[in-house]
Length: 105
Image (cartoon, rainbow, N blue to C red; front, top):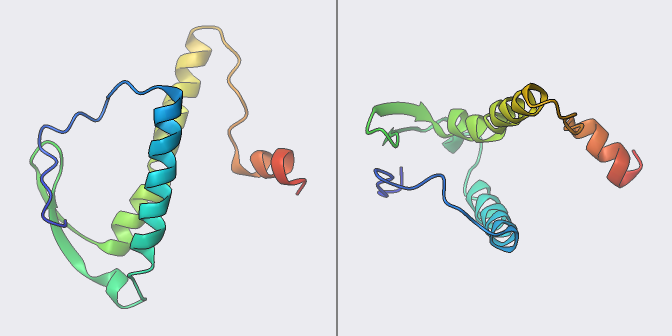
């Protein structure tokens, strides 16, 4: 979307826990900076982009940001399923439970 080509990008790199923490922090900072660039009108701007498989698409920034927000739930669900298949009890991953345990809400 910003002229960067993600073709061939290794999405499944091996990171240490410390590298994951740094990447998560950096990503959160970049995401916050990105969101500050938008107002209601610009969120509806349609952009062209290609997936990592070189498939072209057009979506609004609003749709893409919604995808960024919601897509990780798919991966969390897959992890929970895999844990259950391997006879592990998965952790509680609901956001409201996180708030209760960390914020006393």
